[in-house]
Image (cartoon, rainbow over all chains, first blue to last red):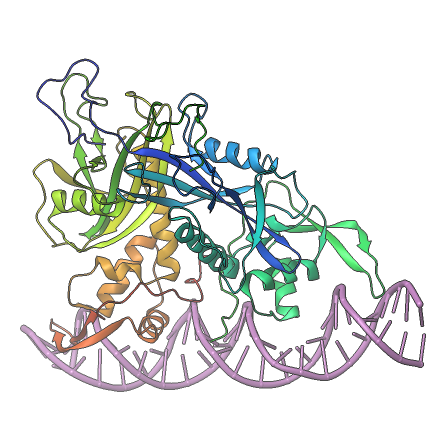
Length: 242
Length: 242
DNA sequence: CCAATAGTGTCTATTAGACAATATAAG
DNA sequence: CTTATATTGTCTAATAGACACTATTGG
C-alpha cells in the first residue's frame, strides 16, 4: 500500500498514473456426481484476439468496478451466473499473478473455490462438468488454470482429512453412509465405518430429521446440516494410509 | 478470465479499455522478540493526497509491472527492502479487494505472511516492530490492514497447533526448550514438556549439531533446521485447553 | 429364511498429558 | 552440596482402527 511509484508532484488526486495489472476472479466449483468429484468448466470464446480460443477454463472474468462491491461478491456473481446457486460454500483459494500468465499483459486473478450439491441450480449453456480422475483432470486448461485447479483439489483433499467440508457437497437430507461415501470419493480411499460415525456425530454438525431412507435393506436415518454451521475442524486427521 | 466487458468490436489487441482496480501487495512480517510475537509496520507518508497520512500500515505497495515478475517476487522484494532478509518463510495469506478499502478507488491487495528470526537482517529506517499483546495489536492501522493482520495472527496460531512453522522464527541454532518457548508465546499457553519433545523429535524436522548451550545448569542440546525442509504437518493438534 | 446394508460393541495399539525421576552443569 | 534447568521414564486416559456382531428392511 505504500506507493512506490511516488513522484515529486502529488496533486490532490494522488499519483496513480502508472500501468495497472488486469484483475480477474476465477472460481473452482466442485460437486459430487456419480462416483466422482466433478469440476465446472466453461469454453473460451473462439473470437480472434481472445487468448486460448475454445480451450476449457475455470469460470471467471474481469472484476467489474461498477458492478462488484468486493472480491467475494464478484466470485458469488460468477458462480450464480454459471450454476444458479445463490449461497454455496465459498472460500478463497489464493491468488495467481504474473507478467506472463495472460498474453494480454500483467494480470492477477483471485481464485475461489465453491462446493455445491449435485442437484443444485441450473447450468449455464456454455458450462460443463468434468470428472476429476485419479486426483487430476485429464484435459489441459487455458491460462494457468490447471495449476489453480490442482491447488484447489489439494486444498479440498487436505481439508477433508480434518474438517466437515464434504457436508456442503450433500443434498439437503442425507444418511451417514451417504456422507461417508462422499468423504471416500474425495479422499480416494476407504474409511472405517464406526470411527467415521463416531467422529461425525460427536462434531455436532448434523441433526437427524424424522425420516428414514428406505431400501431393500435396513432403513438409514436421514440427517441435515445444522443451520448456520461453520465448517468443523477435527483435532485429528483421519489416519492417513501411512 | 472470461472477459465480461466484451464488446462487439474486438480488435487484434482485445477489448481491454475498461477501468482496472489498483493492485497492491502487502506483507505481514512476524518475528519473536523478548517474550512476544512482533509484527513489522511502516508509517504512511504525511504528504497531502496520500490516504491515511502518518498512520501505521503493513509494508507493501503497488505491483510494479516492470520490476515484478510475479506476486511472490513482489512480496519478497518488499520484505527484503524493509528487513534485508532474502529467503524467509513466505506464504500467501489471501487477498482483500473492494470498492471502498482505498479512498483512491477500487483496489485489491494480495497479502503474504512471513516469518523471520529475531536477529535476521537490518531494519529500514521507517519500519518498526510492534508487539502483539493478547493476540491483537493495540494500535489502529491504515486501510483494512487491521483485518489483514488479525487474519494473519489467526492463521499463524492455527497452523502452530499442527505444524512446524515456529521453526522458521528460530535462529540458526536453538535448543528444544527455546523452540517450546516460541510455541508457547505464539499459542499463549503452556505446553507439556515431554509430549512436546516427543512430537518435535519424531517429526524429523530438526537435527542436532555437535554443540551444547551451556549455562548455570545442565547444558542443552543445540539443533538446527534440516535443510530444504517443508513445514511438517502433525496428524493431531496440540490438545487445546478443552 | 436370505441378502443387503445400517448401526453397535469389543478389543487393541497409539499417543497425549500429568508428573515424577534422573542428569549435568555452575558456583 | 545446592540450585537450576535439561532430559527421560512411568502411568493413565482418550480414541482411532480393526473387526465382529446385531438390527431391520424387502423379497
